[in-house]
Image 1 (cartoon, helix red, strand yellow):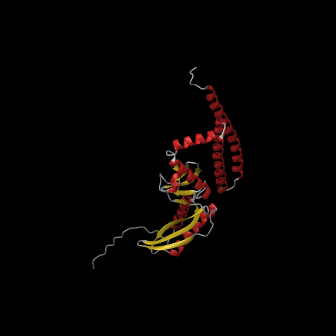
Image 2 (tube, rainbow, N blue to C red):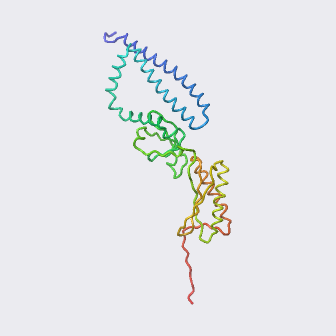
Image 3 (tube, rainbow, N blue to C red):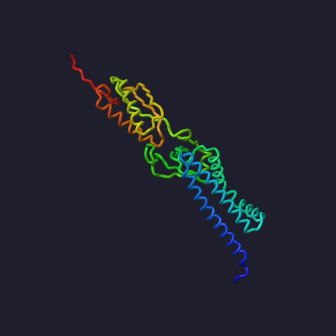
Length: 278
């Protein structure tokens, strides 16, 4: 066997790696079982988000402690830890500028809580539901993207945490689950405007009650347009149900106006009238 191979050093390294792996697996098993129990007790989206983020912090702390223990086992003192940390910092300091910014952004998220897991948010051009918050990325279940509507596209977008310092963040559900939405349609000047308003209000109330989302009464707005009068019904609705409820209210309004004699939809058109010369 060559003289330059130090068997004692190799065995020492293998023992340190083995101890680190055993400790990590031991803590991971306990960690997962405790986390599952807490998640079962969580009743709301916010509570589940708090559990996920809390245990994510604990997981990273365990990894750091296990690595420190491995250095102690290998070096036999804190001097070994300091030497290893110094060399590692010198080698990776420049390369890890971006990831360090990501970690700082992650700390900002878990401390300031601009959004939770399950919230619907917009970060720059990306819009979607927060699926996970990791040390390096925010996992977003995209809405829209492939279509011009706020429905799940089926794509997962990973946003680097460092982007949070560069982009505006809009949270749909920071204060509560509901946002303001509207359905708008136009009727002719000859239409019975009061009846059109009643149809809009009744249609919205009927659909919202079916979903159990009537947290306050829908309200109306009307405006003049060149081809008629806009009737706008506005209401608060869950961000996730927005497209479904808007579609059903639209269908309900159409079904009630279509057979009506004194309410008619307005649309841009031109009429040509021929008059006989006298």
